[in-house]
Image (tube, rainbow, N blue to C red; front, side, top):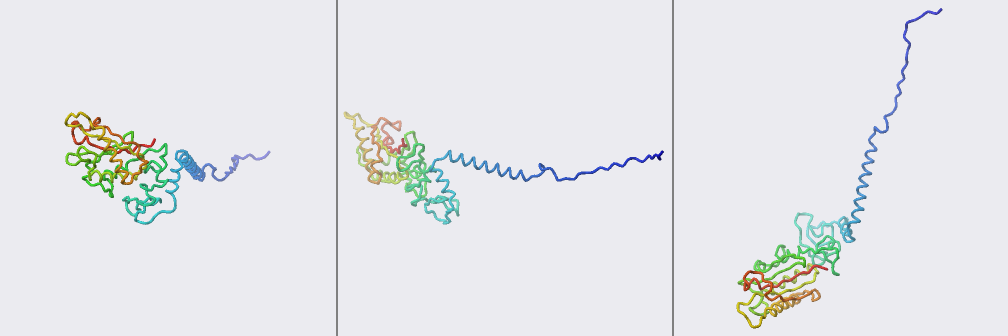
Length: 279
């Protein structure tokens, strides 16, 4: 019979050493972030293609064109800066063949500088009269409108279009008293409007208004006088370079639409030049 022993059995534990689990790594996160960024850019591109017109897309393409002007002077060009100076914060005058005023390009039309094109305007475009108003009211550095002339010009935007109102004051009339003979003052105003009208291609309406007569007349000539004055301003505008094809209508309203409470006030003698919205 063998000898007994109280020694405990020896247990050998083997520890298996292996690499970290795959999900503990971070490389996949970087790849996923790149994928999400690319998808976001893709969907943004698809949205832009669907929400913009052909002219607007051309404008975007021109903006990112590599031809960036480095000249500190404005050439009125059609590059990335559109005539602005990259060496200062001021916006320089755009008066070249690529300007957004007299000779607009398709890409700048898409940016809403004038809102209409040379063949009658885009049906979806909305007229932007801000540049025309600024020119007429002397808000531009190159404006030729003097303070004296400014006192006789009022503009307002209506459903019909931009209304430019020229009116008499107590010390300065637009026409000789009781006639349709224009004063030299009105001729100066007509020249300003004619030059400013080159900023847009909208059709034009001219409407005449006169004050009431201080005495009762057997034959009221207010209708003939208001119409004759409107016709005279139309002729002045055409003589200053406005195309006859742009004239849509000429109307006389007599003394039926008074501006001042006093029907005989000089302020009621006025001519309205309306730049009509495109149909």
